[in-house]
Image 1 (cartoon, rainbow, N blue to C red):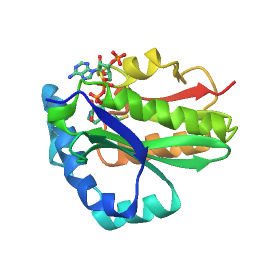
Image 2: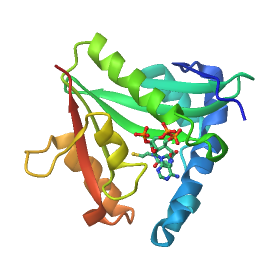
Image 3: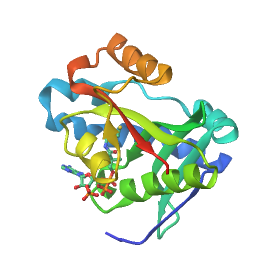
Image 4: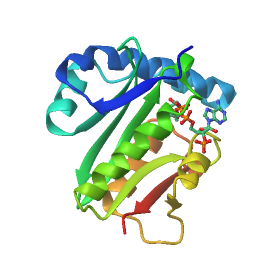
Length: 174
Ligand SMILES: CC(C)(COP(=O)(O)OP(=O)(O)OC[C@H]1O[C@@H](n2cnc3c(N)ncnc32)[C@H](O)[C@@H]1OP(=O)(O)O)[C@@H](O)C(=O)NCCC(=O)NCCS
């Protein structure tokens, strides 16, 4: 397996590859049997990715064969970059692609002089909150949480996520 990959802004032609990547990425949740259902949940279709590529921020990671194997989708909300989705194909996980995608998003936020990067995630899965913490994100427990993060957490609970295992995180941009 190649360790060579590049991260770049997505173009419209990338959209078709993204649903399969998100499905493949979600297979990882089967490691926790109570979250196995996430691997069977419907993912956004290519048409929704097209809209995001045009109107929001999508970066992709591609391997040395120019195959797209990971992506990060984010929205700018209230001077902050909110990461909505991060997925890396199962066979390509654990090689630094996820970290590289998050670092590109953070760099974008810095260049745009945004206030912070935010996201919601699982507190206790090793590839979720602990990973973001190592990149400098803080769990927002005691701090007042932004409205968009409250809404994101509520929407997740509404579709069955265990609320006590979810958290909002923020990386302030100095
Ligand atoms: C999260 C995800 C995108 C990370 O992608 P990746 O390419 O494997 O990321 P990396 O190789 O850069 O590893 C990221 C971190 O997770 C950890 N990690 C990755 N896979 C792991 C696994 N199976 N078990 C435990 N830890 C794991 C690594 O130790 C790494 O931490 P470090 O960079 O501080 O050493 C990927 O695991 C994925 O698609 N997961 C399913 C969807 C998901 O959880 N998305 C995030 C929603 S907030």
